[in-house]
Structure formats: structure tokens, C-alpha cells
Image (cartoon, rainbow, N blue to C red):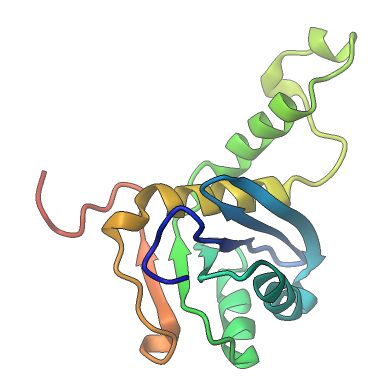
Length: 164
């Protein structure tokens, strides 16, 4: 569904050296979340994008992004791939996790910044990347997959060179 619209589905990847968070997100909310081994990321992204009718793949721009981008390119996916700045996604993913999964009685006594989720939260970070993309998608020109490997870089406060 290129061109945006309320039903646009984004598949986001929070890349890592050993594991990656995946999420399928639309403006209506989170459709799917998963954590996969980095070696399996291209296959998992292709399956999720196909199941959910994704219009674009979003990849975080930091640790492990080169490996994930290469795997996606090698897989020959027909969707555009956009990189999005990951700054603060891990911290915000932790906050989101605790908001959606409040700690028990004694856990509430531990200050929020000291609480560690009982499981990896890479999938929550992928959700945040997708939401970051959707929040700024109106200002972003996506390259088709055959131009520059379909990759475009977007920073959270990028105004497209329009000044302030």
C-alpha cells in the first residue's frame, strides 16, 4: 500500500549482532512482534511482510544494521528498505515494556530506571522504530527497491532540508 494512508503496514527490525527484534505496525497499532536470530532475519522479515501486506521495511541504523541490510538485500525483497535512527530506542523500549507489563507488588518498589525486564525487549524497540517512521512518513521520500538498494536514511528530526 505505498503512498501512505491509515492502513499502511510497516515491518520494523531492531538489528543486533545475535538477535533482532521484529514488529509489524500500522497506524492502528501493533500487529505482530517477535525476536529472531540475526541469521534468520531476512526469512522472518519476508514472511512477516507477506502475511501483513507490508508497504515498507524499516531498519534501525545502529548495531548490526549493516549485516541486516546486507541480508535483506541478498534476499531480494521487493519492498523499499528505510533506515531510521535508533537513538534512545532501548531505553524507551524498556519503559514501554513496563507500561504494558506492570511489575508485581515488590517490583513496584524498585525505581523504574533500575528495573530490568525478565526477557529481551528487542521486539519493543522494533515497535518504536516503526512508530518513529510512521510519525514522520509524510516528510519522507522512499526510494523504490531498485534505486540504491531501496534504502533511505531518515533521522527523527530531519526536515528534508527545508530550514526551520
